[in-house]
Length: 219
Length: 259
Picture 1: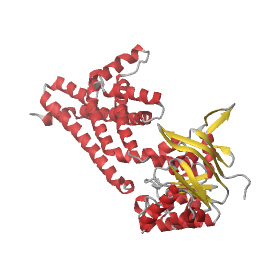
Picture 2 (picture 1 turned 90 degrees about the vertical axis):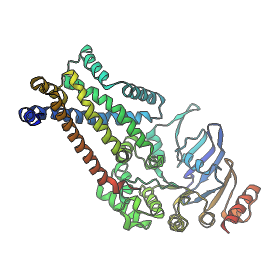
Picture 3 (picture 1 turned 30 degrees about the horizontal axis):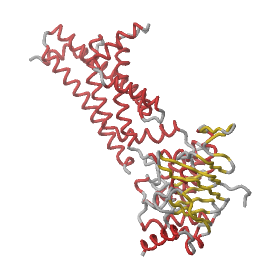
Picture 4 (picture 1 turned 90 degrees about the horizontal axis):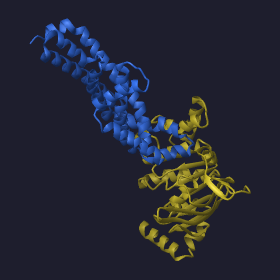
């Protein structure tokens, strides 16, 4: 076992790979949150057509493997004339995937907010968009924070799949290191530790946010 | 007194699926009058009030707020649901208070009051907060301005909700069972605020189980049962000289409960 040798020779590569993993995951989660919010309100829309369309999207992206989604997006984009780099295809696929899961998380959170709060706001003349942005979403985000941290951890781990479309993130970096060191066991264990460390930081951050929000969220 | 009623309800019908919950209600509320709607649970009184605010759209009939039709547009005898903007405009003179207060828990008492002032009336922060503090003081919770609703008692929360509605300078206030969710010892403080409002000449429609309040404060009491108005009149007539069997029965049940 030669962990130290691998680390000292390849730490720059691991760092670059981990950075790519973090950036792709963070961007996908953030974009997925915006899309997921729209989708969540679509899922509870009074308009049947919007509700159905949202449900179809949700079920399609929740019901197929990320690896398959990734490859379809990767090969589909050039077909429709969008010549984007692999990293963009990766972000698009992960965003559209996490949007479906986040939408379900948000929908669950929104349903726990008493509808009377919206009625009171409507009677005061507040518009639908304002009610969503200023009254529903802030309360809902507090409620779903633990589930949202879970989803973020999922995406960060699943981002390892984008190595198959040649995005040099942590997983693909590890494969490259293996191909020069012939030390797969140590290399992948190092990768595992880096993934774990990133996720522990995420979990800690989530717990910190939860503690900070707790007093105001109490009813 | 103004020539036009503030609220005019004509032949109101409402169905929830197969249930016919409002069966042709007529009601006129003149300026500075207090109308209390009483009746057993399920009589349709809350649905009536919600229809009068178009929170529950009514099926037939009309609701006029200061002479403007609420909720629908009528052209060539056909009627279509009005735009949200028009509905907002017509009901901008209505302030509503709910059984469960419906405060926003992530905003302070003051934040609850200033939100619509800033967003709907487009006031600056300082002006909105000045009005907010004034309204909270008016209902006796001025010292709670910076507390979140979870820190307030039920009575304080309901008074904050009243302040929130009053801040928008409504011409009529709707109260939907405003004390039904309160612990008994907190009912009085809310009724007192409502009585003060009535004394200042606020036009009010109050759906309530508080017979004492209705007897002392109302100009007119409307008794509903089974989706119909069974009897209406000054409180003395309703409470002391009930004509219908159903009202007598309702009052007897209520009296036997309060012993």
